[in-house]
Length: 416
Image (tube, rainbow, N blue to C red; front, top):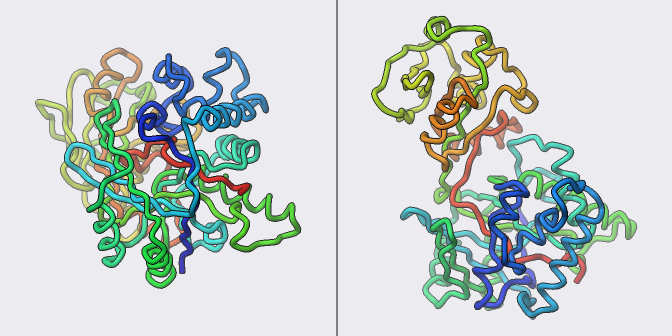
């Protein structure tokens, strides 16, 4: 069963929380982060993306980068922008976007649960991104950002969370993107014990939703620290844990993750339609088309939208990975027609998160940057869990979770 424990968070003072809080490190590039944090020396971007404090040609993976991140964190503490809670606590974290509300528990998961597959994965990690996050942990001995995890809904945990939310929150602010964030501290020892016990008794599997690289980095560096003291473990060592926000699976919202392609692989418009027509029924649409059900797709080319519906026999609904619409798109269009086989490395394809809308697909094609775009029906949590439970791996760029956590609201100290 799973291990979930409280911790003494570093977090912002109430009057500074909106100034500190920022989007996760992987949502935007360094230039975008520099613009968003302009004039705000307390932005947590200076901690999680410290390359913004160097000239643009500076190596983003140099040791100076990671040292600077820790210096910037220490400065926030020294200047009383951040403080550390005196007692180990859980936290309840609520996000509201466009009427959708999801509430998670903030605490720490065991790194052993990562290695023994209680914490289940559905994506491969990239070595360069993993090493970057590991270097941040090594340099700081902190988990700067939580990982975004999910667990099968437990009624008793929902009751606890609802009870906590009936009191006044520690934070309540609306970020610049319109998402509302609220946080409550859980310091009552009986409630803490109940939460720990419920995870130990009723939650046998936890699923990575967003943050495979951060989870891997936290677990692997924690094991490095443990090996450095000859394998000594125990609750007294905070590096046995990685900070996380855990949401019930029925509250999460996955958006579509769409594809745009640079060229038609030597085909003209009509030839492309003929090739696609082998495996799909094609219907012209008068406006932007977002698939209404699985196994249908939108395609935008030459100022025209089409609905593509998979023909019977072109997919396998008994295969957890084969039934995914991104797999169907790859196997029946991207690979045979465009010769795009490796989604991780091929420079002819790019990916657009559903938060940006279908207008972004139109923009990328209309400005000549891309030749054709495909909109995809989003993956479900049931599909993600099924793939994870079967120790399978999803194709790249499949899940886009919204709303995303804000960074800087809580930090886990591995060196207490």
